[in-house]
Amino acid sequence: MIFKGKTIVLGVGASISAYKSADLCSKLAQEGATVYPIITESALKFVGAATFWGLSGQPVSTGVFEEAFGPSEIAHLRYGELADVIVIAPASADLLARLAGGFCDDMLSAVVVANPGKPVLIAPAMNTHMWQNPATQWNRRTLERRGYIFIEPGVGRLAEGIVGAGRLAEPAEIVEVIRETLFPRRDLEGKRVLVTAGPTREAIDPVRYITNRSSGKMGYAIAEAAAARGAYVTLVSGPTHLPQPAGIAEMYRVGSAANMAEAVFARSDAQDIIVACAAVADYAPTATALQKIKKSGDADFAIALTPTIDILKELGRRKRPGQILIGFAAETENIAANAEKKLHEKNLDLIVANDITKEGAGFDTDTNIVTLYQKQGEPVTLPIMSKRAVADAIWNKVNENLLMPNR
Ligand code: CTP
Image (cartoon, rainbow, N blue to C red; front, top):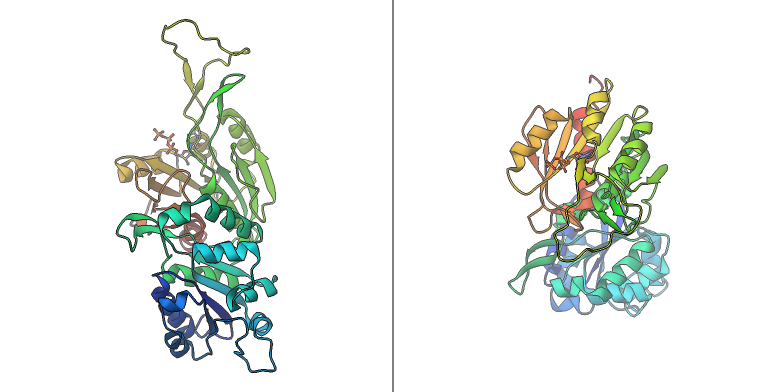
């Protein structure tokens, strides 16, 4: 009964996956929550109000003038007073657009607009093209800036038969995010955590550089999750387009592998946990030209490269007793063997490996599919989930296996 005494407004938007919302409603009610379902007019073409009424035991609303709490109560305000959290699953492209625009033309949108202080969790579900449409992504970013939390849609077989992004997150993942929102864990309180994130840039000349496809999203999610769980977080980030994650104590933006190494080593001794998520260049130009290199005829042109310092390996060498070191391994083949080799060679406590060739994993995606390897015990493969959910799963593992008091 993890949600005993909590009240959840469950918004249901139009999507073939609305039936999964009935399962979510049932799970929440079974865990002791009082669930108030609000179903949009279009969603009623996919699911029946009676199902949600039966599962929740509460009145179901659709139109903004419906009197869910009798004629003396203004329903869209009353819902907000009662709710500890507003969960919208599934959210259609149209619903995201209306929420981003501040529309109040049905009960669900009116409840969201009328109660700005309430946490809002949004689990979108739609066709891949609708999800990836710039208008939808613009609306999503607008809502994120307003503080709404997105539960990333997964990649899978969609109703129209193709495989792509847009599938509603599994009810179990949504329940986990609701739990995280209502009862934030503070299990990293008092810990100092340093996270590296993003790519590095190795200059060739004043206008050109060598870099890679890392977006920084995984590292930023790890840093944000650690801060939410009470850690004092230092983020050392290569160049990214991402804003500073919420709750971070210190942030340093760096360029090259050498810059990143300097920023990390200056702070590494003070850390309880270091997570090296950055995609650090393995080689940098041996010399950076001071002037722009001019092309010279049709002859081939070669750039001499020198290995950079392996920051993580050096951290493994310097590791002090009790310090926890976590690395990443981005692989395209022999994942297990390569990950375990890095785990041992770099003196790590945990390595997070992903097969970057898989759809929904790796660089510049919002989701990831990872396997966690430790020196002892079996590897754990997590299902596809949002990078934030992966981050929390990593921190759960660190708490269960590495931060035990008898360590
Ligand atoms: N790493 C690092 N410094 C480097 C290279 C990598 O700190 N110069 C860290 C990364 O942050 C990551 C881990 O080492 O946590 C593994 O990075 P990856 O690129 O997967 O492997 P490499 O060790 O560089 O080996 P390879 O490129 O041969 O797979």
